[in-house]
Length: 450
Image (tube, rainbow, N blue to C red; front, top):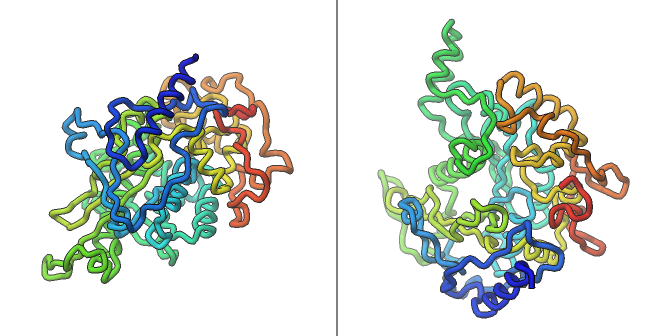
């Protein structure tokens, strides 16, 4: 019996003995790495959930969380509240398979759509000319939100990835599009940013030197788990979500008037002479242990750093509900709900990260060269200007080498939504015919660029 089969047998026994909502007595992580997952891998955690919303059921992790560092101890969370006790459930919707599966899971658990909100971070930040992400990503998440009838809040850091890449001075402020209205709001700018703007307006001879004193990027993110060096995730996603959360709380948009009393958590209290309501928010993200060694060490649930129970009466928990799922489990959930995936999967990509993600393989960048030749050429120009390569070790052409795209299904007439276009329609969200795994599933097993 090979290792994959042995792991499958152990996981099946563990699954049968450990229902999802039971306390986490299991001391070893039972998960399958994506590299070991195939079409023949059994489905364990991707089976239909039983509805629990409104039944007062607290949710506990399948595996007890880590507390081996000071940081892990600080954010450790033994269990979540019952789902109905949260004022808002925020699904961080990247547009990829895992975040969409998280949403499907909540619907099976019985969570009403009125309680859920999609948050999508636009990493390009409405930059006037440059893109790092798929052109269709914004339209795809908008179509999914409209099809499901779930409010969508899109947020970004102004000027996006390339604004931060060429940053000199403080980072640009965070903005968001108010769900349901399209109105754009901006988070409070820092004093340092205001000072940098003043320096730019004065346009003195030593302007660049003055701005550099407040920060200077001019380097691509590094391929590392250190978010200080892999700044794209930190500055364009994590910090964006945190800033929006804090500012929504400041604007009293986390809890609608009267919700607190309905939840039975007591009366609002006064703070600074104004009514201050308690808010409870559950942030949901789709990381899985099988994706990487770094993510295998994540806790399933924890307190998010925007949690401020004493200072602001704001409770923020984070849940990774598919963390133990195999790739096969995820596809099974999406098949059950007949969701049409982002077209990058049909084109052979195994993950829906940014189109030009720094972790992309040479074959994937060969695919980008085919899909987006102009953007690929501009990335090469960026390397020359910055004197710093995207791969951190060699230039882009050397990284890609002689890799060729094995097949280009996005060029065929049978592919209704090519990933190189920015078009997506609500009618394409659900599969009408027989649902099948895309070319990019299981390492691009159908011959895509993976």
